[in-house]
Image (cartoon, rainbow over all chains, first blue to last red; front, side):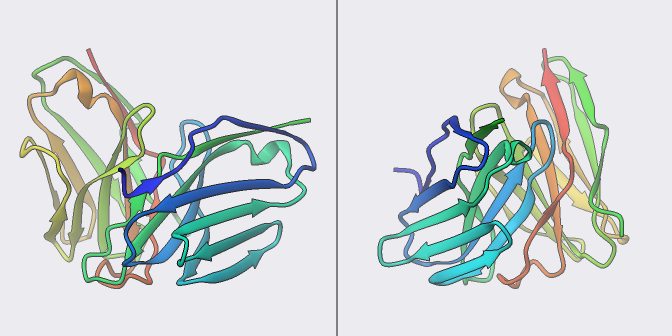
Length: 112
Length: 115
C-alpha cells in the first residue's frame, strides 16, 4: 500500500459544479497537508496548506483534514474551465527532514 | 519577484549519455529540492540541498547526483541514462528545509526524453 493514495481520475464535471478531490494516507505521523495544482507541462503550484486537522478556506477552495480517518479533501466551489488541471495532494511529518510525500494526482476537467 | 527557474526546458538524449539540469531558487531561499515526475506516476523525491550540503536523497541509484552552489543554485546530474529516466524533472525551493512549516515552490521543470 502506498503511503498516499489518490484516484488519478479523470474527473469530469460541468462548469459551476462543486468538486471534491480526496486523498487517503497511512502514516499517522503526517501533520502538514498541502494541495498543489499542476497545469499541463507546468510545475505544481501551491494552492492550500493546512496543519493538523480542521478546515481552511481560501476563496472558492476549501481544504479539510480528518486525521482520525487519515483522509484529506479539497473542495472547489463554482468550478471554472480554468480549474482544469491535475491536483496533487502532499503531506509531511514534523520530523527534521521535511520531505513531502505526494499523491499521484487527480486529473480534473471542467467543461463549459 | 522571480520564481524558481530551470534550464533547459526540454532535452533529448540517448541511452548511456549524461545530462546536467540546472535550477535557480527564489531569491532568499536556501533549500533546493529535486523531483522526478514520470508519466502516470506521482512526484518522486530525488535530492534535497540546503546551504550547500546534501541533506537527504530519495530511493534513486547513485548515478543521480547533484550539487548546490554558494549562490544556492543547483545542478542535477544523471549519468548512464536509461530509457526509464524519461520524465519531467522538477526543482523546488523553500526558505528553510529543516522547518516543516516552510512550503516548497516549484519551477516549470525540465522535460527529459531518453531515446
